[in-house]
Image (cartoon, rainbow, N blue to C red; front, side, top):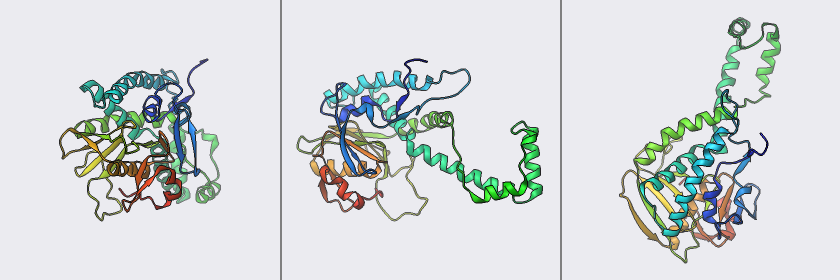
Length: 321
């Protein structure tokens, strides 16, 4: 279709504008690209996006159906966020529900998650392929069954030894369709959202001299409430007690949700804002977004630093919050 959107944001523009000096169409953000080790100024429409990120190929649905549905949600979200930014409060139940939907969406829909899923599937499939060529008899049986079920043409068979060499070389990768990613994300939202709703949420307001909150291309930060020695497979989960979900709402506001504390609001100091920003930086995939480079953040040793020093100090940041 002519004129349909092809550049899709995994972090909505209406949300990113909350970290700019202006919330208008001409909003500008300070972008610190940790991967490229550079900083620059950009409009929200030019960041946290990719071509056809939500484009699907499913019979009976338009290719941009999901993107258009997200646009409807973001229209409602924009109005709720605007009220929160002006009033410096979380708002009524409907507005807060939209915020929780945003957190759930950002938690499951991002390039990092997609690559993790693709990599997992690739490792599983490659192991299965190695098993398939473990013997010529196994290969023959597997191929014949696939041909019978209509997955491959019966005349497309490759010599067993050629296939064994190809699979053994592992000079190939396994891709996942965007439709598959989108389907998985929609199902995950249904899992994560109720867990977010069961948490108690605290609104944190940044003091005027704190430099404000920042955000990133992966702004949902799931952390343990208390740090202690844990095993390799001991990761925080959205349904686990003793965990916190930290999420920046705007330059002035952030929320933290736990299963233990009570709902409320609090004004926090520069040092506390810096601690939140340190967590956000540590969870960023590639880029950090802010009003300017005058924000504060902490390193793993809890020392406080200015945003202008982030690229120089990034190697000292810890991912183990």
